[in-house]
Image (cartoon, rainbow, N blue to C red; front, side, top):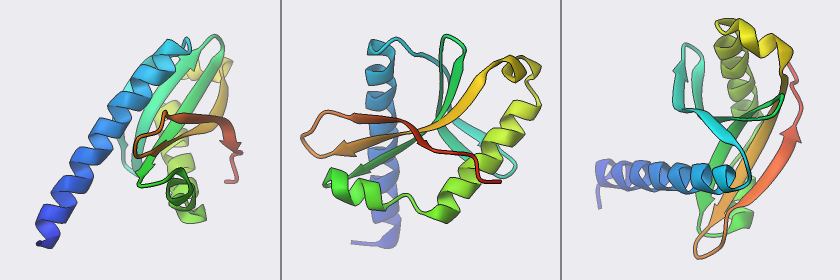
Length: 123
């Protein structure tokens, strides 16, 4: 199997996981504000709002939840933080919101696991 084929499969799996995560979060009362949001410093998988809370959400899908949990490293968290700051800077309404970083873990054959406030802004 070629690297291109592997990347295509990984991309499709990621898009599918983000759709499932978005549906799961909507069922929990969140409103999805943006999906696959591109900023000059990186991508944010999902941005969701519930009340006065705005969550920047990273979705990780792996064979097991444990593998998914280990897939989010410090460098990736910092990239997501920078992307969230860049995204918020162009949206003044976010100043009145509580911002946080969440993760949705996806394991094969398992329901999604939402981890609110998975880490704090370290920039």
